[in-house]
Length: 176
Image 1 (cartoon, rainbow, N blue to C red):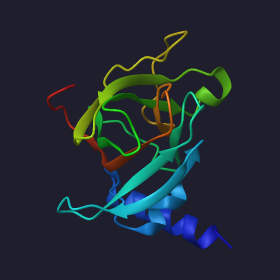
Image 2 (cartoon, rainbow, N blue to C red; image 1 turned 30 degrees about the vertical axis):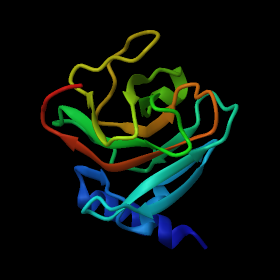
Image 3 (tube, rainbow, N blue to C red; image 1 turned 180 degrees about the horizontal axis):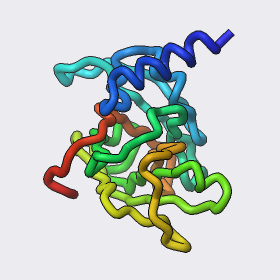
């Protein structure tokens, strides 16, 4: 029953590449899965429509979202960028992490990640991709074979919510 929605979302993601998600279509949710939270699209007074809101429960050390089946070849792009902010309920600031897994990560449990401090104000997070090495063994991340993108809070002290928008690949910009 969900196959047509999933196939349409995969096709739309490939068509809009290097924009990975702008959350203007409910169908895009088919590519995003909760990691201990509840997902939903909400319209905000931001001038460009909908965002992904992730409400997380108390007690989960890594609540967030995972995107699968996005376009896999990220070569030629210098950074992953996304807009993020906290939403009520949440303290004034929390750590938000971005994790990128290539296909090989399924076998060797190696990935690349970075964390950022986010507040209730929108902030563009920039995740550099050039020469990116994985944690642990430190092998070069295979940008031509990306398997998953995870965005999650780092050990929130209580239930919290965050929003994402404009997930995209870009050429080099002003890093965070």
